[in-house]
Image (cartoon, rainbow over all chains, first blue to last red; front, top):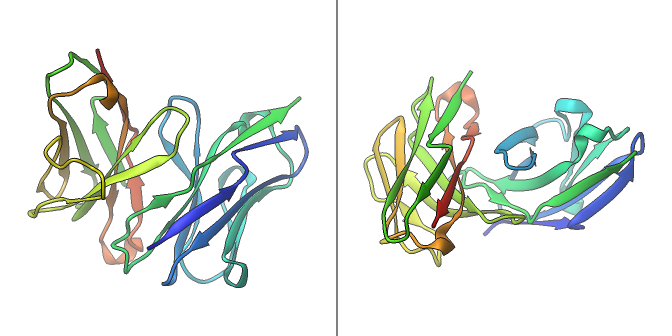
Length: 114
Length: 118
């Protein structure tokens, strides 16, 4: 079975500060890893994904994440937070052997202070 | 590009009635679709995996007789909430797997459907 743990249900940063959202996964097979963002009352938007290859993945809106197999982590970062980044962020895992079911973490609400 | 469309985006129904939500893949054939529900301020919970032409596989704890899933074609899966009750009010999201070889098995999510049972 696969699972995802997001550390911190709420993260607050100042505008212009570094954003770091933590995600650890559990998977007995090579994982596919994702970060999604959800704005209030809206659907999901894919920020970035890791499947194979380069472990540092760049996504939209200046976000990036690094797959670290030894740490079973896939933390999301952004060098400088913007007010528009305030949203709910979900880390997710899937796999070929798991039938591509996407399993989501509990989510982290990002607050950005002016 | 590939898009997954859900309809309706919002629906209000009376308690005891049934409501159907459609999930369509546009531009690609989706042999596999997934249904999730999301309660307010919570994460997405996988309800079932829907494979074209076969019965859906439900996750543990999901009532298959209450949440009927039909995947009759390669571009359409439907979720019917039968005998809906207020506790079924939720945000329902589908996703579809693009199985074409060059797509890398990309998963596309629909925009979601808000169900309110009154």
